[in-house]
Length: 225
Length: 237
Image (cartoon, rainbow over all chains, first blue to last red):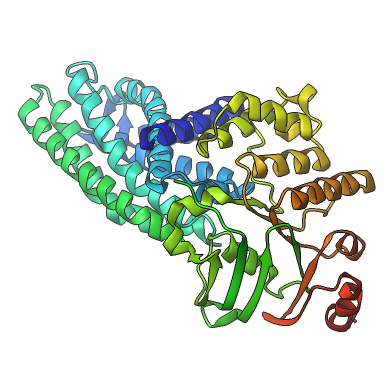
């Protein structure tokens, strides 16, 4: 039942997004604009600043993720459909997992556009260790989205939600961003430091377990007004 | 996960938002086959009381009993017995009428999803528009669809927040007829409304709220207008 509800909520979110394409277009546009601004600032005569690519990738993911989280929950607020979800006899943690999976998939699509662009503009060797890079991105995205989904749902009826979401989200997800940046930088070296990247991946997996567990535990009481 | 009840009773319920008190020691009850109307000026606490009845909001003091159990005692099974038609309709505008109903039917775990969805679309008069997205519907069509969405799982207690707002006369008459049918089927209906004509046609009991306090609770249909004049119209003047 738990997985069925999570699947239903995720499928509904993806159907809504496929119809409107509002969040995916705005998020990709924002992420690409972010990378281009950094490219203008940090690439001189075709030569990018050393080691900048990893940081720019994760900053863009964090900024784009915040935008996606805000817009996704704004949609639920608009017709108060989040209240309808909360009123259903379904497990609330399952609803949380469904929302989380929807956000993660959306951000992975954004990253599929973002990573090649960063590779191109910053001469980052994105194809040298593709599996490890994908692993870092997936784990980092889950950690960031786990906290983001909880806070975005919690703030959905707050008047200052657009300001409050990044203020609450960034300090708590700093470990995820740091692990993502350090792991990606290790992979982008001339001789990729795979062991180091795997150590950061293990740390990201640990953060994911902690953040998802805490979110599942706190979602129900936090959503009861 | 089955649970049923024949009466909902509100006992000495208060609700605070920070320092502001939205409800003060409200007590009332409604039985199966009755329609209770909540009347009062804006800000009287009607929607707060409806949210408490729907379990979306917890009371700061007092309790609500569904039969003999509180929401905490009944657990998630209680939510399968509640239906809420809010002013915001709780529909996804990007999904079609059928997709909206199917999603909620599956979420509530109802049996024979396709059959229930087809029957609900038929009752809402939207069978021919089943594959149209809801954003293209008129307010009346959305309202009918939202009501059927709230009834998909056959709730014992149906809560309606200003269901007649924005509807033309024909839609109001159709909605009143549907609500009478539900009353006849033994449902408990709680309706927030400002429409006195509809109130007189539909309500069995009326509770008038003012500044978060219950100022009148009466089961005489003929006195609805009297209570409204005494407590609501006076405030508007």
